[in-house]
Image 1 (cartoon, rainbow, N blue to C red):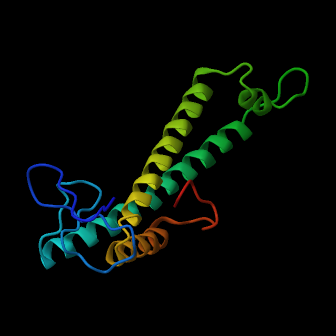
Image 2: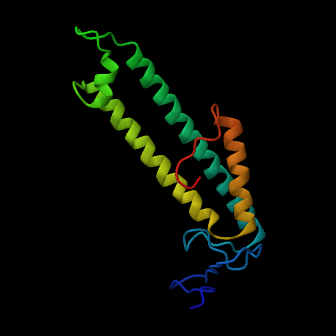
Image 3: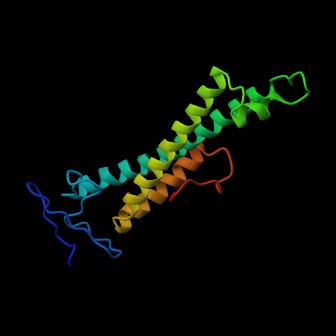
Length: 159
């Protein structure tokens, strides 16, 4: 079963390579409508891919900052009457107040956004096109320079 030149109905043909290539002939990036038809659309698309990837680092930084502010809030809480820290009760789910439940929900949403975003970037990379792969790497570099204030070793899913 060949994957090259798959026709998705009306509009241009999309070339779906399963091997590494630098060829941009009939390249579609993730969506059928994101079709590379000229050098100009290639350059605009590569900038868009780099910006999308840099945006992932922004989402990670927002998540880290929210986690730090939540941790600071928990650390500022007094101990209960038995001398136990209230923070251990908060994270175990016992005695959670509205603020703690909201923080946990926000963290879960931020995590889901990160996972979705990382898989989207993986799909960009899986075009197997060298130009798109390079744009992902450049976007990660730019994003880390602009937003990465912690260790680059922490990663989510595929990115």
